[in-house]
Length: 478
Image (tube, rainbow, N blue to C red):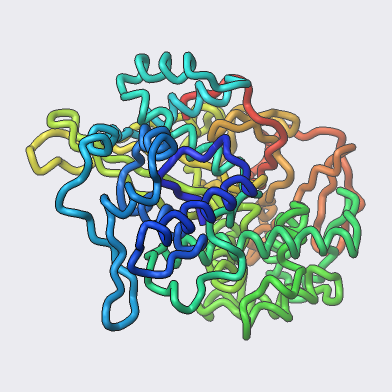
């Protein structure tokens, strides 16, 4: 859960904050508060204020300069309802001093956020002068910039999660005092559990060398696409650690035992995994590796948090005439690139994420839609859709500037068409894995074939696993 706060606590340590909260609770009691106010309730109150209303930038100095308990009592009353729940009522009259410190923040567009992130990333130390400069450049208030920087700091300092709300959770009497998004809490707990279990998993078993792969049988002569998908997931250490950690699966997961055996090398067949697909037509014959990958990942995400390959997609629709803007966000685990013609990867990627015309606005103006991706893990899987087409320029040692990060290819799936004159054959899939020294071809149960480098423009590439290796120093516009 994001630590959301009504006041600026960036420079206050956790211990100092707890001490201050205890002082406020004591002052409240001395001032004749009508309910028992604990330090935890003070913490919950601030969390509630931050979620429910805009940040008051000047409120911190004002509160530190006066009688905090008395001002809280005058401006906000916490009353206990008959059903025991705590509700917040704003006083009819607020002190003039507090009225003057309440500042409304500007609404930031997707372009504002991207430009601000670019400037922020290229600055080693953020100063007031930096924020004033960004404010003038983007045409937004300094308070809006400060609010954004504070939230960014909160995301970076994820070790401080739980600073205001103690790990043991709410007391029984505190239930209902604060309304917090349940989805955010569950996701934070899930991510924290992932970090803990992933670390334990690597500590117990040790990191495997990059030349590790899964040697899998293909008795039906049509499981090659499943074997290839398994090896692409296995080639990414973070994804591998998650899938073979039994503690990270949801209870009664139908995929748990199947994938644990497969990724722990206790089984050498993907047939059982394939038969979990709901569409029975996928159980037999040759299938497209990209299409099956999409279905497998969607099913797998219901049972386990694939955080290492997770990313957030924000889609902004903005009217060119009236300026009305709407932004929707989704969490995804793979992207799609349409290889419609023989062209470079860079150009096709640029076209895919360039602003596109959308349906008309209610005012009659033309809407423009733009997608933006924020990676949440070190890997990005991309499905390449095409009808037997190749890139005009793509090398195995290329680096890619995508989504404000630097990436390189960790592994990919290659399609080998059936030879001419052989009726009934549907082609074959193999996995190529970057070992750090060379490229290893995993062809079902064979991994003997190696190459120093590869020219992917001569191959039919259907699925790519990218690995983040360094923060982009100079951000691109995507």
